[in-house]
Amino acid sequence: MSDSNAALAVSIKRMSKSFGDIEVLRDIDLEVKKGEVVSVLGSSGSGKSTMLRCINWLEVPDRGSIHIAGERIGVNEAAGRKMNNKELATLRAKTGMVFQGFNLWPHLTVIQNVMEAPIYVKGMAKDQARAIAEQLLEKVGMSERKDAYPFTLSGGQKQRVAIARALAMSPEVILFDEPTSALDPERVGEVLQVMKNLSSEGYTMIVVTHEMEFARAVSDQVVFLEKGLIIEKSAPDKFFSNPETERVRKFLELSN
Image (cartoon, rainbow, N blue to C red):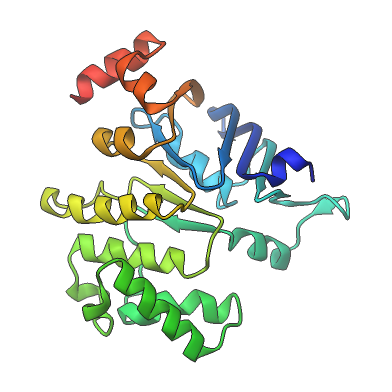
C-alpha cells in the first residue's frame, strides 16, 4: 500500500471492463480524496453505472486496480492472491451504494432495513444498530416513518431510507447511481437536499447524475464519460463555464 493510495478514499488505475465484444470502460483513471464529491456525467450507455459497480466489485474489471482507503479491492496484495469472499465482503462494506431503484427489502420496516447490514455484516448488537439507525433516519428526515414498510413510502422517501442504509455501515465512500432518476419531479429536491447536507458534513461521494445544478453546486470534481473513456475531468466552475471539449459543450447545451 503506497502512501498516496492511503491518502485517498478511492484510487482507480487503468480500469477496463468489457461485456462480450463491447468495451464498456477503457483505461479509467480517477482519484477521489477523502471528503470530496465527484459527479460523473455522460449520456446513456457511456459506462457511468458500470464504473460505480466496478468500484465496489459488483462487476469485476478485466484490467486495472481499484484501491478503497488504501486497500486494493479484489486482491490480497500481502498474500499475493485474489481476495476470498470474507475479505471481499469486509472491504466492500467500506463502500455504500445507493441505487436508482432503492433496493429496499420489502418484508422489513424502514428501521429494520437500516439495521440489517450492521447486524449481519459487522456483527453489531441489535440495540446499538437500532440506536445508529434512529440517528440516521433523523438525519434524512425519515424518523417518523421508521416502523413503516417500503410499499407505503413515496419514491423520495424510499431513496432517503436507502441513503440512511448506506450510511449505517460508516462507509469510506458512498456511491450514488442516478439516485433521482426514478423519482417524480416534486420528490427530486428532497433527495438532493439530503445529499447536499452529506457533502457539507464531509462525506466522500461519487455521484452519477443528470442533475446539473447539483453537480455544479456540490462537486469538487466533475468527470465526463463518453463511450467508456473519461474525456474531461475538472473543477465544476471550469467544467460548466469553459469546457475543454466540443462534446462536453454540446452535452451542456442540450442539458440546459
